[in-house]
Amino acid sequence: MAASKPPAASMASADEKWGRLQATVHERLDTTANYADTVARVVDTLWTWEQRRDAQAALLDRDARSPFYRILWDDYRMSEHYAQTDSHREFMVRSFDRLGGYLPAVTRRAAEDHDLSKYELVEAVGYTLRWVHGRQGVHWLEALGHHYGVQEHHPQFFIMGKTGLGLMSTDALQESLVDMVACRWERQLEGRQDVTNSELVDIAPGFFDRYQVADRAAVQALIDKIARQE
Image 1 (cartoon, rainbow, N blue to C red):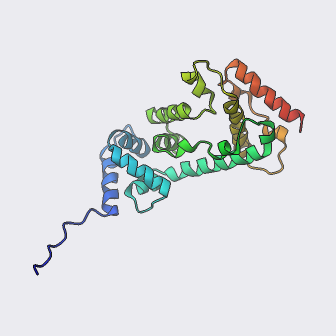
Image 2 (image 1 turned 120 degrees about the vertical axis):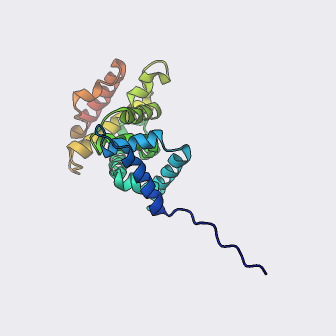
């Protein structure tokens, strides 16, 4: 029997692939951009559709063997964005458990599925750039625009023309209030267990500027009801 042919040259190891990805980034660093800006630009303009698909899968699976995971999760610090999103979503469920009785149009499923698009690469790159690295620019704006375009609990979803009216559906409007409460409870009230409902809905006026006049009045009516019936 003839001897079997030696195997073809093995595929590049994960370390080699990671090194190539890093080299691509460093080759494109210039005096006007930092590392984070350059990673965002490389992912957006140089990675193929297949590379972005593989990166997305590696992030969702937490596949530490993947070179895409290593450059995004560790080097680009996308892990911090995921942790921020995880924490916000936990407070979303806590806020629903506390106030859901006042907001019958919001389901527990909606609270549990809140902001899932932030785990998608198209949003995660921009949100990491903005809230982990403190940078702004086109990649952040693209991520924010995508988020507003798919998440109905933001008034911008409707104002951007999804309904042609600019006014929110009842379930979206009520979820937007739970979202604001979750942000306040986590960031301003530091997750305290002893907070009252009145404290939870004591939301700064500036957050209401994004609503249309009629929706703003509807949200304020819900807040007044919650504070009054505590």
